[in-house]
Image 1 (cartoon, helix red, strand yellow):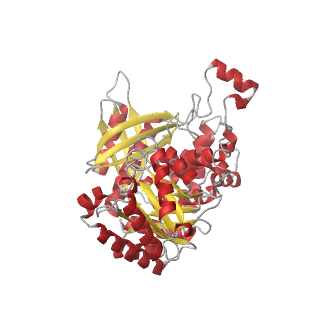
Image 2: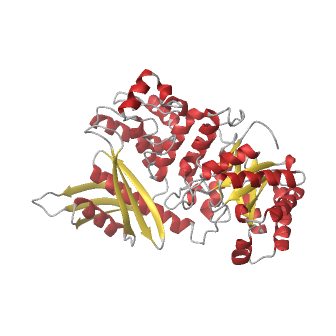
Image 3: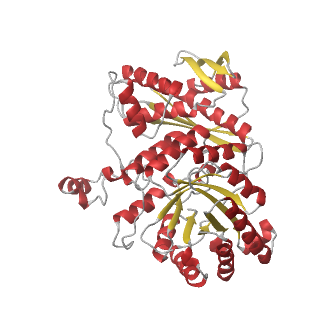
Length: 515
């Protein structure tokens, strides 16, 4: 299908969530889903319904709430997968079932143990079954870039005849290069009969750091859908970065032949910040477009040029992606109405007890700090959102530490609705807090990483702590924010424990992986 519009297929909630430590609960997925719709993505892949009850419920909730953006569920070619995806999408205004099967000889021999003829039969049956449930079906040939090109022509031809309207050519393991990928897209466009009736899509991973370059090369070769994630999160080295692709097309129209996306660019930075606050993983400072250093100039020559004319060293402006300066947005005299409006601007929809809890946190912080920044508000709201289904709730924390005392922490918590209290000694105050929490929660998890960041500048900065815990081979990242870095440490530890507990409840079954 030709045209001047590039569809943006966002898989942050599905493939992005498969990145270690990036799992989201239902409330978090809904929060991010609302922001993705505000961002203007064309399709949201909300999850893999057969993978777990949690994924099923998340797809169903997102499908029922979002009315503008198309909502998609992933399914293997198995009939049970397709039926499960269809059930999850029943409430969607514009549902899409995305079914896939591997096509490379490597996968056929070692994983599927299928012949090529059997794969063609699976493609035909699966797409036809999906079409009985909805009009919009996408088919993906997993590991396409390591597949035989002539076999791919057969596979995509079968998918088209069965009723697929989008054909995805995934670089599942990040193996290809831009020239090779563009040549493959051109080959398929020239050889697959009737392919002009479909949208050709690309789904790239970043194992060699080429996901964005490959996706853009494919667009120039004729692809018209990019599958990507916010901040480029995803399995292994990540997926194609949404913001990088969108801003490349927007900034270089003469190269991309005046192609366009439907993305509202001013929502890019808020989306990046929202995701980071939800999963507790900060964006690397030198990350293109949304990193802290993306618009920073330290070299004297650069500073001089920017002061004279920003275009000397800036090919886009911070404002073009919705990036504000660290300005004072609210103060201790601000009321509920102003606070609610600002939360909505940041992508957080807070209601009822959640809103009241966030507003109290804001008022308490405003009394302690001279200025309250956007980042402070994001941290407050994220804490409320992620606490929607928590088994453990941190209460008061008291610490004795210093060169004249053995570090001692007394921690109060609510565990399964019951109040508990414990005191522990440690080699330092953070160690003491973690030991007290471990005693109260009876956790067997192991601390893998501990990281501290200042969310904003100044002596009264809100501190953010990220904690990585490991248990039974699963890693979870928790985060906490507070003006007291020790309290923030306790909050981060408890957040990670709650995420581990959520997975124990929701994902007891093994998780099939996608493209």
